[in-house]
Amino acid sequence: MRKVLFIFVLMSLALAAHAQLRTVYCEMIGSGSPSGRSIKISFDFGEQKYYYKASSDNQIIDEDGKVIDFSSMIDALNYMADRGWKLHTAFSAAVKGQGGAETYRYILFKEIGVGESIMDGIRLLGEYKQEQREEKERKQAAEEAKKSTWDDVYK
Image (cartoon, rainbow, N blue to C red; front, side, top):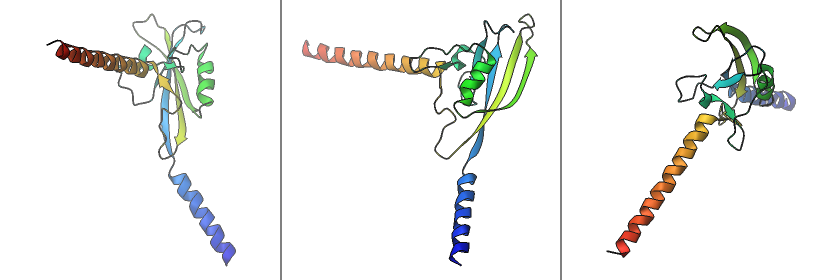
């Protein structure tokens, strides 16, 4: 009887743990020359505040704030696979108005648990720029506050 109860408890825990996972998706967009020499790869996680999803602001950066240059779509796919993402679908399309340049689109997915973010381990250039602007504004506000106290001393 104890064994049956123990097995039932283990199965319940396993089902509960699996039920808390959710699938999230990302679109990896590569545009540029088909040779891969000048390919620009940007990412759409569905949470960006930037309107044009293939903009430079949606490129992945390293810890120093530098854009990671991928040599090909496969290079970027391997980078994302190292972070737990899996390929769902891949397709390409010619973009009108850009001389028929190909745009490569890979749909990626991964399972995340409660409390995890779709962006864990990934930073985008646009977020970094926003953080830099906010830091600059904080410094300027602190300088202004400091100057206003100096003015009070000399009044």
